[in-house]
Length: 508
Ligand SMILES: Nc1ncnc2c1ncn2[C@@H]1O[C@H](COP(=O)(O)OP(=O)(O)OP(=O)(O)O)[C@@H](O)[C@H]1O
Ligand SMILES: [Mg+2]
Image (tube, rainbow, N blue to C red; front, side, top):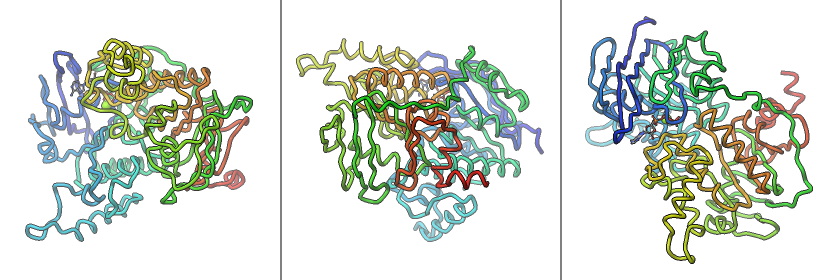
C-alpha cells in the first residue's frame, strides 16, 4: 500500500486582505506515512491545513484525494473523506464531559434521545485502547490543557480516519503524555493511517516522520526524505540562517542568595489538594525553574501566587509585604503572568496587538490617570513588536488571526512593557519557533539582569536547564527536589519528577 498518494494539494494560493500567505504551495502525503510540516511562526502551516480541511477556502489550486480531484468546502466534507484534524486552537467545550466532547455531533442515540450510557462506554473503550489518563464523565472545565489536548486526539482517533492531521499536538503535553502519543502515531502508521504532523520540536520530527515538508514565508522551501532530516539543515532551510545550538546544553547552574528576597511563598495549600505546604523563595534577579510532570501542581501553584485561583491557606509575600493575591492587585504590585493556556486566558482575539498590549498597561498609557493616550498606546505596542519580533508587525492586526506562535508573543510582549518585580511564565515557548525561542530566553535573562525575579514553569527539559539559575521539581503536589549550584542533567530532573531516586536510576 505504502507509496500511493492519499492527499495532494497543488498550486495552492491564499491571501488574507491582499496579503499573500501561501504562494504556489505543493504538498503531498502518501498512504501510511508520517509527514511532518515545519516552518517558522507565520510560515503558513496552519493555513495550509485549514484549506485542506475546508475551514478556509483557497484562492487558487487543486486538492486531490486518492488521486481524484475533490472540493472540500467544510469540515464535514473532509470528515466524509476520512480526514480528522486536531487544530492548534483546541476546540473542546469546557462545560461538557470528556465523552460529550469526543462524540460531539455524533452522539449514539435511542430514538431522539442521546444514549449517555452507551456514549460513556464507547469513550471508555477508546480510553482503554489508547491508555489515556482520562475518565468519560469528567467535566472538561476541571482538566488542564494537556488533558484537553488528549481529548482532541481521542476525538480524532474515534472516527477511524484514513488521515489524521495534528497541528502541534505536543505543545502542552508532558514527556509521558507525548511518549504515549508517539506510540499511538506509530501504531496508526502500521495500520496504514497517514499522519500530517506539525511541530516546532525537531527531535520529534526527526524521530517520527518519514518525510518533511518545510514552508518558508508561505512558499515551499524543501521536501526532505527521512535520511535528509538533519537538524542543522532543517533549521537553516526554515529560517535561512544558522542558529547557535550550543546554548541548549548548558548544565551549570549558579544561584546567588545574596540578593534580596523578592517573592516568598509560605505553606501554600490548595482547597482541592492539588498542591500542599508549598514554601520557597525567589530572589531579585533570579530565574527559578519549576520542573516536573504535567499534573504535578506547578500551574496551580503559580496561578495561586498570581491570584487567579485562591489557595486555601498559606502566605504570599512580595518584598516582605503580605499579599492577598488577586490579578488586579498583582498587576498593581508589578507581578506579570503568562498563562499556559493563552488562547483562553492570555489575550482577546478580536482586539489588535496594540489593544492587547495595552490591556494590562492602562495605568501607563493614561493621561492624567484618565483618558487613554492613543499615541502612547501605539508607541508601546510598537516597542513590544520590536522587542520580540511579533509578526505581522502591523500594530492594528487582530491577534485572533495571527499565527499561534505570534499570538504567544503578544501575550508575553504586554508584560515586558511594565516595570515588573516578578514575572511568572507558564510554558513560555510552547509553539514558538527555534529562532524566537532564543529571543525569549534573552528577554528573560535581560529582565533578571535588571533585578526582576522570574519563575519559569516548563516541561521542556532543555529549556529548564537553559534558563534557570535554580530548579525546584514538583511531584504530585509537593516540592520534592531543589537543584542549586550543581551540575544538573535532564535525566536528573526527570528522575526527580518521576519520584525515582538517583540510586534507583543507576540500577535501571
Ligand atoms: N484568518 C486570518 N486572517 C488574516 N490573516 C491570517 C488569518 N489566518 C492566518 N493569517 C496569517 O497568515 C499567516 C500564516 O499563519 P499560519 O497560522 O498559517 O502560520 P503557522 O505556520 O501555522 O505559524 P505558527 O507556527 O505560529 O502556528 C500569518 O501571517 C497570519 O497572521
Ligand atoms: Mg500554526
